Length: 213
Image (cartoon, rainbow, N blue to C red; front, side, top):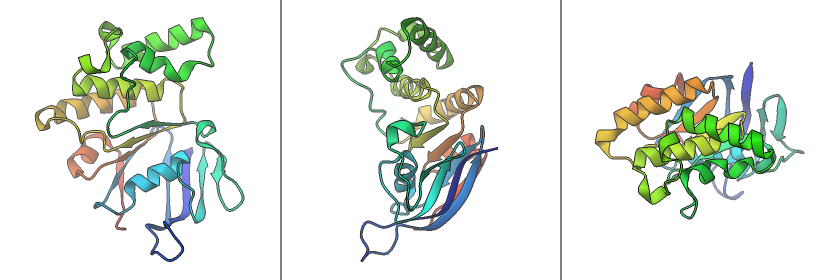
């Protein structure tokens, strides 16, 4: 079953400019981790923003879990697309501890359900012992796992990750890649991961889509 279907997707910053993305089509199956490779300026991060609903395409359509979220006549807002996102800098709230960061998107759940889901996420990313620590008290890898847990907590249909290793020390990369791959596969998460580094994609993803700009 395809969780994401991208059909003839095009994007340009203005009608006078050459499209950054030109009639791109591919699909992602449930539980599949797909890497997006390409040089700077090829539209990789723009693609994530289009899927998330942070930008609108000039043509084509995006379908998530069988529902069209954008086409010529439809635009579903970001908060109701069922998309989770991990940003390049993790974007953790500095004034909230690890547990409160992860629980941030669970405000619609009842107290008991919210607590159970938080506990499940802390265990998944192995941060139960660090639940009361603040972002500045965590290592880069721990911050990334906290950001990942926060994105996974509301049970999104698809997870978007933008250059998740760019802020990590080279000596940590292999370990963090392995941890991330294991977490995503245990969670059976469908994921679109952008990177400029072929090694990142080969270590984590089932397959790649290359963008040339």
